[in-house]
Image (tube, rainbow, N blue to C red; front, side):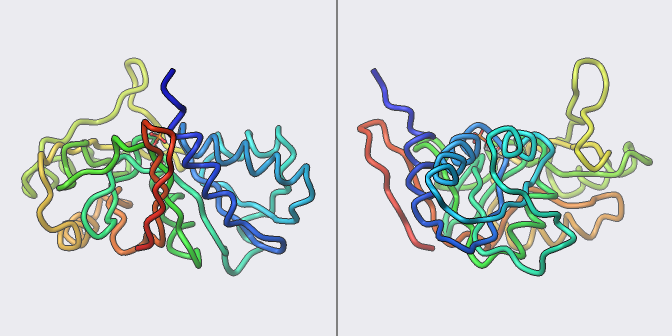
Length: 224
Ligand code: 5RP
């Protein structure tokens, strides 16, 4: 039977947590395993406080007994553990497949370390095969999509059934098919210059280390 690569990677990253830390909890099916393991370590005596990047992850943490601290009560996060949709060259990332990119980026940008956990399928030579999630305000979406198209992608509003998907912040997500993204650094600036864009799913120069779970049951740890 194939090992659970996401679980293995997530559990390895949780080994990096120490007493006294403020920990950012990511979102998604890999972050799920990290949250589960953190809860086990808390039951074993690990003394941390956590902030979550989504309502979903906050509920999991509360249900499993991880001590939570309000986001407005903290000035720093020591370590955030989160997943990714693509891990490209220089550990630039595409995130937001789970719709939590804005809060994830807020946590990541204030974290001493961002640990990315993923199975081996997420490593890519060039970012952009995965449609880039871009969080946009619900006002004038047609105009915002036109501006996104000018950057060379095919954008589509993410749906939840027949309605637009709503993020935890009440916004929409435009999934933007670029095919390939040659210069993530430049693209992230251009995207965030569009007034209707709240944030985009490119995480540039944010990763501290990646934990890649492999089919053979090993976990590769790469420092960025
Ligand atoms: C959520 C994210 C996730 O980290 C990303 O989509 C990866 O998810 P998974 O671990 O389920 O493959 O960015 O917004």
